[in-house]
Length: 264
Ligand code: MF3
Ligand code: CO
Ligand code: CO
Image (tube, rainbow, N blue to C red; front, side):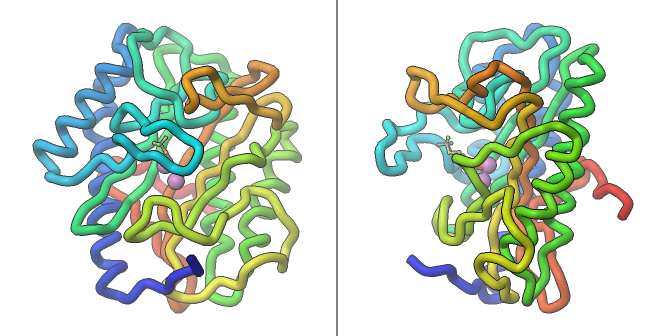
């Protein structure tokens, strides 16, 4: 399927789905602390999405090619887990870093966003990784405008994080999003300026860099979903869903609790 251009009506619906996804993160933030299990966080988010927001948690039973259906409603990736961590009985503990990734479906359209959370007192290195990954996501977002290329986004992210000694995960990337969870194009978080697809107003995609404190290599766990760093180094990720506008970009996954964009 080719890259679709969304109409203003479709983007209005995606703004709603995106805000709801971000509001799930606002809702869950006070519960994210030592002693809570990721399974409990999943249950709270599920009930909030279904019961309060009346939207569908897109991950639940999501089954892309080659995968068993995803068993939970959100993804929770702790410490050296890169992405797609499956919520379970493990309790969060002091010093952990946690990514919570929420994807809603409302009125037929998807909104996809994730944030990092720190549990209690985290190491300076862990906090720096989370902060720099947030900045890297925003560098990618700020490269979005009509006439720019996907490679400009990847380059903005890669050049910043590699200068800090981190590495960019290659096997997973941002993605077009709309009626489908994962649409074309693939939005790589590395690349060369001026390369790749030329952006046009009405395109909607995610930017969701996964940044490792150590080497870029990853592997999948036996559960068929959870991705971890091969060297067990810490990994962080932030995600927004972004629309290309006539003059630049609009972030669709914002809410009252979104961390403010960094100053230029
Ligand atoms: N939300 C993830 C993304 O940003 C995808 C999760 S797929 C799942 O693309 F099945 F693991 F939930
Ligand atoms: Co995504
Ligand atoms: Co996501």
